[in-house]
Length: 373
Image (cartoon, rainbow, N blue to C red; front, side):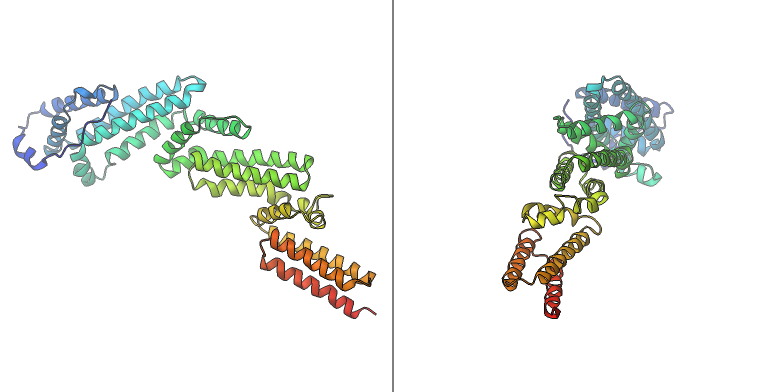
């Protein structure tokens, strides 16, 4: 079904060409014509409608003070069809539920566009003067209330979306275009609908998922492997948002992953035996150190934790060197400086905070050597 071409209506001309007497049956007869046209639109049979005549009928009803009847009739008729759509969606089998919802949503939007064109004069005059909801917004609100908030659809929709996201996390390929259409529908209904009917539950279920994942990884992975998993999940969630979630969700889901995977375990990760920060420093693991720097930079006190552990280790190394007082003390001191210059440059992006911390630690054990007997 294709929407009618846009037409330019001569509103003032109608006022004189279509004068209607105050016939008690006029409003009912005219509304019946308009109601039938709306039924035809929703039944995919709008090609037989004369949209210019329908516009004139709606125009004259407003002109002759039947705007309230026109508006209430429109609400009743749209609601009738949305209840039929809701029943069809509710009856859809599990695998076809989102497809049916999306199909009916597209039908409703097409119908709403044609209805708005017919009731354009009411939209511009009667509705503002009576502070009623404009036709397009009315259609969205009715879809929200009758369909999305149906007792048999609302929870099912949430569960279906969350299940598909979990299946994607588990490696299954899902229909991202369909997911995008459904989440965009929720966004079109208003940010509060998207947030309350999906995003809130998505963030809560994600926090639970990543809490369990973090416990599994912290038991089975070394620090370097764990950080790779955290980085992978952060990238996956960013990609997920770009494909089918609201852009504003990215910050929220990123915060969830950072809290559950990094912030909750950062002390244990830094001090992890045989693979923590000190081991990375000793073995010059520039890539892994860079990953830790990048990930810990995201969470409160993560930066300070790396800096403090590194500073403490540098001072311990320096104290040991001073205590040994080898003949090649200066050469080994320069080697130590070169080592940390590389780490700060290659792994820590020449971060001034780390450079200052290293300089302070370096000066600390040089002073120790100067004071030693």
